[in-house]
Image (cartoon, rainbow, N blue to C red; front, side, top):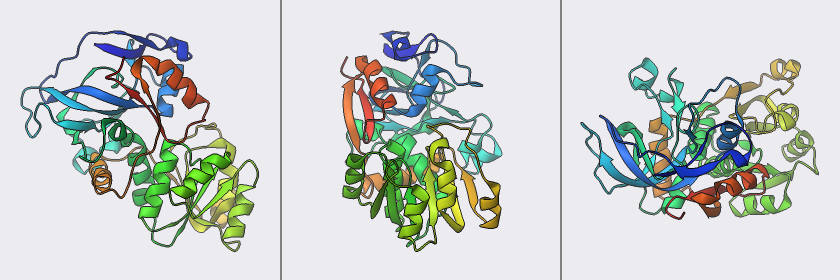
Length: 345
């Protein structure tokens, strides 16, 4: 099969598009013929190398995958060859107390496809049957590949960790990214008053077209001052963060007394400074969040099937242009997801 993979860490030039051996579906596994794979910042980090994460070379990238069932391993039921599917990106032991309690993303053996284990930026992928989700009929393969990681992440952040309630004031940092767009849509679905931020006026205009009630350009406005002005000095009930260092101190200042700051990433840097006085005096909750459970993905998928959520695609490129896709994502010029078409060389 053709695959996009690395044999060593480095820049986009380290991405190879070459043949690798076809995988085989083992017992309890499903073989998926991929049709589309969406990019995440995770792909850039793994390609470049992350301290503490060791991968086995050759390592195939890609966590967001849509395709068609090509074969079934022994013992697999409830899935048929030819089914159009989405792949749940998290792989866990399915035996521990967390997995059996529906919190598989808390499993000590939790691995993300394309991160700790090889992913789906290839023509064929073998995954546990538990990771197979029926693709909503109203979504193309490209649209289906664009939602698992970002919408699952945003769902856990807002619906589960921050427990957003109708009428609350929610600030979405970095709205142009896939997870930011997912956060905007989910916060609106939950009934919040949503403010989107970006350093691009064009992205803010697009965010308003998606339902943002107000916007802040953080290159031109101070985040904390703008939020306080919008809320009568009260601050935001919830701040949704995947940016990290560059906006962290301002995000804390923008959070209301008793408010929640929920974070899933640090694309601008992880070594942010925290003035703890603002945390304990104002009783702010800082909530970490990683991915979400397979059950949560089914909830998200149901909302997509009903049209209440809809992935936003920036552009689609053939799989052979993975290097260009990585460069585009690194430049942060996109609004929505960059997707690779694995059926087009």
